[in-house]
Amino acid sequence: MTAALSVKGVSFSYGRAKVLRDVSLSVAEGEIVTVIGPNGAGKSTLLNVIARSHRLRHGDVALGGKNTAGMRQSQVVREGCVLVPEGRQVFTTLSVSDNLVLGGYTRRKDSRTKQLMDEVYAYFPRLAERSHQLAGTLSGGEQQMLAVGRAYMSQPRVMLLDEPSLGLSPQMTAQVMSVLAQLRAERNLTVVVVEQNALAALSLADRGYLLSGGQVMLEGTAEELRNNPMIQHIYLGGAPSAEPVSKGIAEAIDHGQAEK
Amino acid sequence: MQLLLTALALGALYGAIGIGFVIVHRLTGMVNFAMGDIAVAGGFGAVVASAVLPPLGAILVGAVVGAVVSVVMYHLAIHPLRNQSLMVQTIVTLGVGIAIRSLIQLYFGSGPRQFPAITSGPSVDILGGRIPQQSLWLIGITLLGYLGLAYFFDRTLSGKALSAFSVNAYAAGIVGISLTTMATIAFALSGAIAGGVLAAQVPTSFIAAGAGLALGLKGFIAAIMGGFDKLGLTLIGGFLVALAEVVVARYVSAAQASTVVFVLLIVLLILRPQGLTRQVVADRV
Ligand SMILES: Nc1ncnc2c1ncn2[C@@H]1O[C@H](COP(=O)(O)OP(=O)(O)OP(=O)(O)O)[C@@H](O)[C@H]1O
Ligand SMILES: [Mg+2]
Image (cartoon, rainbow over the protein chains, first blue to last red):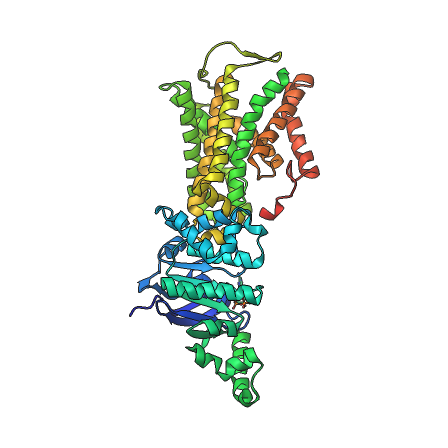
């Protein structure tokens, strides 16, 4: 079976600073995969390279087996891969409904806009109540819903989410996460979600990758990662028994980061 | 009253050129100093077309020529520099302006040109002042252009995409809106309104190849008054510039009218960089 999203040997630098080193990952259709890792690990950079907000210079990204080399950003969206960026990035001076309409910009030639908007409003009733409000006046959580809704408007097969829980209350986070689970169940949507909140992400995801210093340090099922001593060390304060092991690996991570 | 009427017609022209500045600036953040010369190119397009078309058709051709020249300029001179700083792009527009001016001069010479008005006949009396019929057409065409643009930005998907791009270029990219497409539309619209309105003015006065620089600067002042953001305020700004100009021409001296306008520009930049709007737009630049 071809992967919905496959990333092979991707490297990326901002000027001289190398931020991604030979990153590879593969996500099956309908799978929810999380990428976790410390600040500055390159998680956002990775998503931006996949979505082609950043140029892809080294390595390959394929969507449903189709290589995206040479595609422009809008073509990647049309191929069904859309980004929900870090910090939400809604169009603050436009209304909620205009934000959604623009989410469907690459699908402007088919006439399903109205129907898709109703679907978004069904997932997020809050947005329906505020459809005429300017997006900039929404709360952080509502803006996150809008960012997800806007992405949904392009009828994606793969949705990349960059820290959707950032600044959200636990309830709000749970609501957004449950919509993602719903989208997967109902539409077979493939989801890649980057999270600081590793436990929340691992409870939603099937599998996960640990990115650090621009490299994939670990990959495994959510279960495996939850029980991994290194993850526990970083995110759970480390169980005493796992200390010696995790300390060694954690040092390796720090080293990797210092290098870049 | 007479001064007001004259200023209204002249102000419509400056306002239209100012709108041309604003549309491009909102999207790209740069100032297109070739704007006046693009408008003049439109005016000469209309002069040429007037040989075979009625005046209204010629004015339409003027708008199309303005749009085409503007778009060609974007793709030849600005697009290749899209990764350079705004300063570089803005300076290049000055060069392009000179190039357009020289080309027009080469083709048409520097003498004045004109073509007939849309409706011939005597000037119209309004509240004790007199205004040529063509000037009414000019004002009407400007308002029509303004309303059309307002509708475009508010109601159409491309218009919303342009606004979205100016608010957040990164997010616009994410939803698949491309800079090249948006810039092409913006340059076309700005060239069309400036070229079309200038063409509508040609029958009431004359057009000469060298007119672009001064026209551009007056449109630039109008755009500053509109905060380089608001189309309606830019039109009002155009009117104020024109009013200052005709008042000085009438009571001081016609020769000094332009000087006064430029002094006005400097004073304005010092006292009120945000123009008639409430906020400074520096964060966009
Ligand atoms: N535009 C940029 N120019 C230069 N360096 C950048 C740029 N954006 C990010 N970086 C650097 O690249 C590295 C990776 O950044 P990135 O945003 O991908 O990390 P991240 O894993 O998403 O971190 P966080 O969890 O804090 O969001 C960081 O060291 C950052 O300083
Ligand atoms: Mg990040």
